[in-house]
Length: 83
Length: 400
Image 1 (cartoon, rainbow over the protein chains, first blue to last red):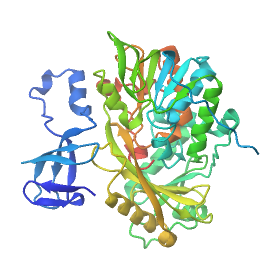
Image 2 (spheres, rainbow over the protein chains, first blue to last red; image 1 turned 180 degrees about the vertical axis):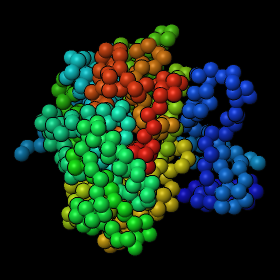
Image 3 (cartoon, each protein chain N blue to C red; image 1 turned 90 degrees about the vertical axis):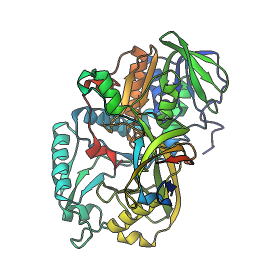
């Protein structure tokens, strides 16, 4: 069970959260201009590092707010949580 | 019976091979075996960072079935199942393949519709399967709770009689022994850290025991596929997650088949030795830690007790995690890459064990000929660009 520090509520158990995957994946600014390859990148390809990973979590059973965190995917240690 | 001194040699790596396979799990070993047997390519090394078959091959729940929805999946998984049926004889080693069948339970009306549709698709593809009522389900597995008073009543289930389980260690050792006999070098404790390149061509691998040149390289590294691919700038559409499983203590034979439930989220069989073997879904977050969160275990135990009240007296002995690489369409990626002479077999997510001989067969073909086998052609990396996805979430995502 991960212990996750919500930037607003403090440390809570993982079961209060849902995972949102990689952070900072912006919706394409000009979708109609995208090639098939670029659409594939946007829809299906995400970073998958062994080590520091910037990701999203939502505190579903708490304040219900989204936040970003940097977590080490080899150790599951949270390095940074940010509003 | 005398115990053999060894089942395979333990050679040092040579400077160069015709083919290097990265990862001595079931897929890597099967690929090496079929490269030798089907294609006469024996100047091959299989490189393993740990010990042979100590990754997901040692961590899966050994379920074998081919009752997938789409034609492409049915074809490749049924090819694998057909190979399983004669594999003990082919490899001259008892892999304890037991065709005790698999029940996939339905607990909601939508489950029922999806299940009947899948059975019909299976029949059209020549895959054995039928839809069973709760009473028929109970006849096959009497310890299953099919009472209408259950929290999530069993409304029926699909039944594939030719499905079953095998002994995972024996499978790995059988492939390893035969590959070794063909002259394949199985090299343990030799971690691949990157690739040798000549422009857009891969010409070998960097390892913890020095560079090894190779005519062709086949990547079969499961959860670590994208880490390795990243070293040559190749992005794969996979995410690595922990998948947990657990066993009870050894019990008398009580559970005659394999039971899977996507809805209450557990799958259970009884190993030959007597342990109840259970698995469920992946942990939600990306991880390479080979461990998961305890609440996932708690949920799957609750589901198991819901289906099998008799298990209340059993004790959990061990739980563990493996790292699985999950694709967006719950189907694997087997084929060519944009880099010449680099081939990839990854993205099996939670269900690679059942495909072991089948994927070894088609991946060996792909590496040997430089072209995909017709069975893995649809499972190309390009499908994420063309949009020709093979969406097996219904038959695959949770329950493997």
